[in-house]
Amino acid sequence: MLCILVHILVIVSVTTADALPNTKLLNDGKSIPIVAYGTFGKTNEVEIIKPAVINAIEAGYRHIDTAAVYQNEEQVGEAIVDVMSRGIVTREDLWITTKLSLDVGTREGVLPSLQTSLKKLKLDYVDLYLIHSPMNLLNVQEYDYLNVWKGMEDIKKLNLARSIGISNFNSTEINRILANSKTVPSVNQIEVNPIYTNLDLVAYCQSLNITVMAYAPFGFLVPRPYLNYTTSVTFEDSVYKRIAHKYGKTTSQVVLRYLIDRGTVPIPRSTNTKRIKLHFGILDFNLTPNEIYSINELNEDAKVYNFQDESFFAALSEYYGM
Ligand SMILES: NC(=O)c1ccc[n+]([C@@H]2O[C@H](COP(=O)([O-])OP(=O)(O)OC[C@H]3O[C@@H](n4cnc5c(N)ncnc54)[C@H](OP(=O)(O)O)[C@@H]3O)[C@@H](O)[C@H]2O)c1
Ligand SMILES: *[C@@H]1O[C@H](CO)[C@@H](O)[C@H](O)[C@H]1NC(C)=O
Ligand SMILES: *[C@@H]1O[C@H](CO)[C@@H](O)[C@H](O)[C@H]1NC(C)=O
Ligand SMILES: *[C@@H]1O[C@H](CO)[C@@H](O)[C@H](O)[C@H]1NC(C)=O
Image 1: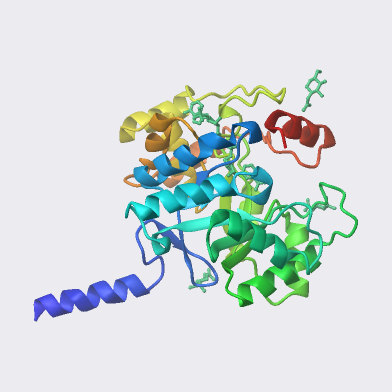
Image 2 (image 1 turned 90 degrees about the vertical axis):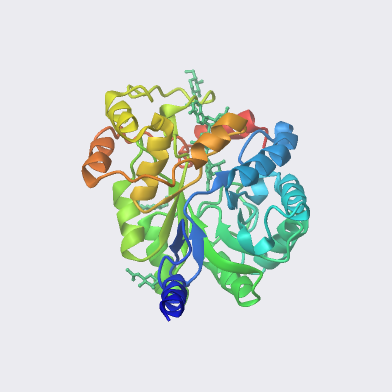
């Protein structure tokens, strides 16, 4: 009898909010893993991504973040085939996020571009598809992210993407989507880290039940060779060190946990086997509100990915070989 009761309780608890462990409930009812493995790197070194993604999935990551512009969807797809063929995971265990090519600016352009990505990824659907940017970064002839969003709604209806969202959108751009379409984006993927806390935009998204994925989770705490900014804060800062010591973690693990405890989904990127493992070891502790506050205090409002600045996009493209 007790045994049956326990079973019922377990079933009830897995069908309610935040059901699966280490996932977050999106506004469309899907459960997204709370940490993603980032794959953006130099396009002339793209072959290192396949073993890196295999390492990441073997280390426990279930969420992989890629994009058409990263030119590595084929290598990510090969890694997925590899781990699935060895029985390490099934398709249902994985959450694959990719992003619309930057050269699509119309509603009609979305479906063929997603089909190209799916073919490279060797998948018949992605879990999450994002508009990469509201800005017309490649100066394509027709470009309106609102039309593109209608194309995103189309592909969701076709079930080729289970969830749809946006990336690099500010509150004005989000408001324009909300005022002119029927679907609230499930995710906004933006830069968030201790050096660029982005408090207002994160709060705005969260007030709308739009989940924030936090890219560049280490911000200027790690080298950004193509940029000139130097921060006064490092991983050695006493605020991080004190918290790290308390939980028996490294300061980089504290930074990732800080982002999770702010309710965001961080996307650490590493091709170093040791760090891939290290960055996944963040599921067994929580920061207190005061600890989050003390990390927020170190904010310098310094954004790594400043797409508004043309010289930045040129420097980034050159460094990464895009
Ligand atoms: N939507 C967008 O527009 C957008 C923009 C930017 C990024 N993203 C996504 O977010 C992901 C993460 O962003 P990001 O690549 O800028 O990454 P990040 O995770 O903030 O930083 C990655 C870099 O930091 C180094 N690193 C990591 N931990 C370190 C440590 N403990 N000590 C020293 N160095 C360390 C890594 O080198 P090693 O490899 O040697 O560890 C790597 O070069 C991307 O891969 C991409 O998936 C999206
Ligand atoms: C967010 O959306 C989920 C799924 O629809 C829902 O269960 C949850 O109550 C919503 N949260 C808020 C704060 O509206
Ligand atoms: C959002 O970006 C657009 C385009 O760059 C700009 O016109 C608008 O002022 C921005 N809104 C906010 C709140 O920053
Ligand atoms: C960095 O500084 C150099 C030299 O001052 C300058 O030419 C370059 O444009 C700067 N790069 C960025 C991304 O600001």
